[in-house]
Image (cartoon, rainbow, N blue to C red; front, side, top):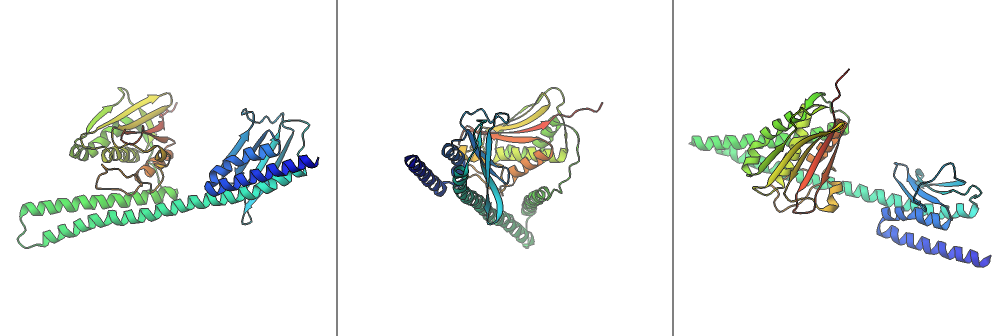
Length: 361
């Protein structure tokens, strides 16, 4: 019996040491490993860590899930973050005659200290990443405003020069118009993101043909597409593809995707805009053969303030809000958006999926 206790204590010490090392390296990965350790130490059939925000990490020896009907016992131990509930660590037995005892409760108690530390560190890392992105965003915003403001100052000075020629006056006026449009769009993106975050963005929803959205978008983006000498292919269905949506906001969504393709595709590149329908879902996709997306960035590309650096990036830059707006506005329409890429230098594809319009009976 003493040998068994000694062996169990040694196993526990090794497991805690392994988890502590994982905690120092990657808190989230430690949370992923913790259920398997708890299951093995407590000889349970399944175990898991459930955080208060809904994130759950589980371990199951059989891989077939836990049958409630067959469950013999369940032990749940909460853990906290400075006195506030942070989550629970739990184990389950599928043996009808099995009952967890005080020793297993003690082991879970030890492991919850590690769970609490890992959850706090993980959240702190996430918050630090958000703060860093916001700091980067403020720097980018300053850069994005400084450039057009400098151009406006120069153009204004040119117009005030005595004896300015008519051709120079027209060039300066056109420059002012372009820079005002650029600043207006920056401000509009900021305001739209704020409205969405506060739940104040209102949609004027009606039955909309996605083919019209594509036509209107490409017509408005034509000057930039032609300037970059891109080849644009449009693939649309012969029949209307109707969705319930705000046409102005849907044009905004597609415009951001087309602008992205134009910006990250070298001159004379290829862009395809396709509209399709399958079952109860309509899809509009924008595909290019440009710079592509690194595999480790695909998952975060729709987060606010996220930016990619590419050698072919257009001088207009951006604030990292365009794709965030695409996702948020699409979700307000009851849809979803996804991105895919074969890797850097191999192009990318963005697809917006929307529920089809259903005519009233």
